[in-house]
Amino acid sequence: MRILFAATIAVGIAWAEAVVAQQASVPAPAPTSPQASGKLQVTPDGIATPNQEKARALAEATYNTWRLSVQRGDETAWRSSTSSARQMKVRNLIISERGAFPRDFFRSAQQAPQLENFRFVGALSGCAGRTMAATYLGKMQLGDAGAKQNAFVLEFVHENGKWRLDQTRFFDLSRLPGVLKRLEERDLSVLREQDGFHPYRSIPTVPPACANPELIGKVFVDCPGREIEMRVNGVSIHNFDDERRADTISGGLRRGANTISYSIKPSSNEQDHPSMAIGVFVMPETAGNRPVCVFDHVLDADDEAKGGEFSFTVTNEHIASMGSQYKGQQPQPTHAVPLKPQKENKR
Image (tube, rainbow, N blue to C red; front, side):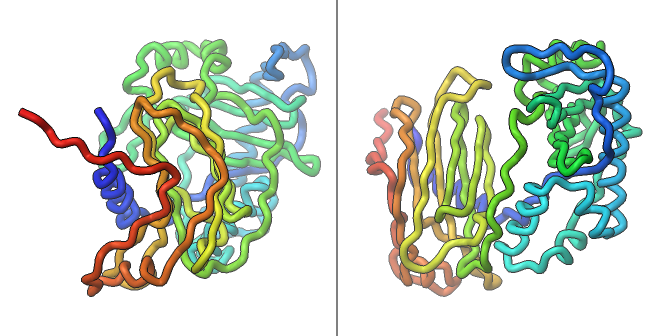
């Protein structure tokens, strides 16, 4: 079934009207290497199996230090336990939504889960022992849904002589009974088989510090079966993998000319490549106003997904159309590919 452009943009706008500041990912400290003793099993892809007891102790000391720093609003401890790249990403996110950093980070940070509520499964290391992913298992209640079994993955990097937390991820295992069973049995081979449990293959790059935004912008991507690497205005870097997600644009958008570039390739997690949508929105800053789409790339399942470099313009008409009292014709976004006409249903 073909995607209808109007429906796709309606979904994007509905998301944009409801979206709130995205929660920043996490980090933490503690020296010593989990592979200080014992022979590592390193595979051709560079992933190793470190000493599990050392890895667990290091992961939990680092995560708990980070968790307490956020809970107590301790900026010094937070900076010490958080990777350099994550610190800058958090700063850019808050600045790009007209917040004050670090004040607004500690004001809005949600309480992180206690590891005592999870069971350690195992850890893998990468990047010649400078990155590590530790996986835990436990029940989590996300949103209004009931508590479900989730994998809780902690991603660490080793910088300046100590381990720091970069981010955490949750994976709902309720529809993956096979994976859940193997994790419960502490089958470390399943960690190697699933990318979501892998450590970083390189130390995350520290992004440039962004300036205060002229306009708050967000990018909405729905890319089942595809991986997308994206850069907006040469500063804001985004990565999407077989998911539906929205990101704040670092440095925001500006009136007039803007740029976006991205590459698209099949995801390692999915063989099918159904429809895809990318939308760039200017976000409202006045109560009652609505977001406006200024760039889109909408594809049907049978279209070839090609990336590239594109320019788009945020016009005065776009800004005016965001007002609650606007009665004129809705201005069109820049289309990366021509929209297909909507087919009428025949009975």
